[in-house]
Amino acid sequence: MKASDLRTRSAQDLNAELFELRKEQFALRLQRATGGSAKPDQFGKVRRNIARLKTVQREMRGKKESK
Image (cartoon, rainbow, N blue to C red; front, side):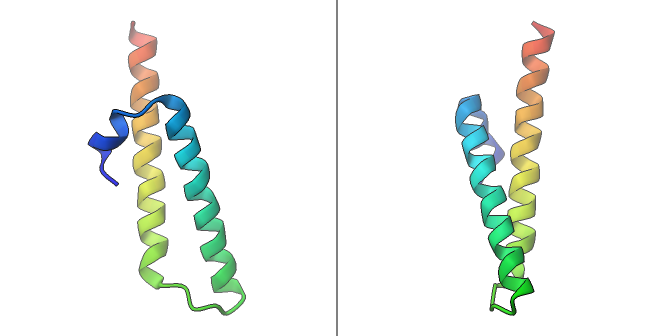
């Protein structure tokens, strides 16, 4: 997931994507807690994607407020 790709999406698409990433993060935590074999690198990837998405959302909010 690239930030440039996220910037072309609408706010509703970004919210939906954030919701899906949060669900994925929860599922990974649940797998780890129950002894499942989740890939350890996925935790960091999902966390970074959430941060990237939230950064783009914040940028979009800043542009709306400055107008």
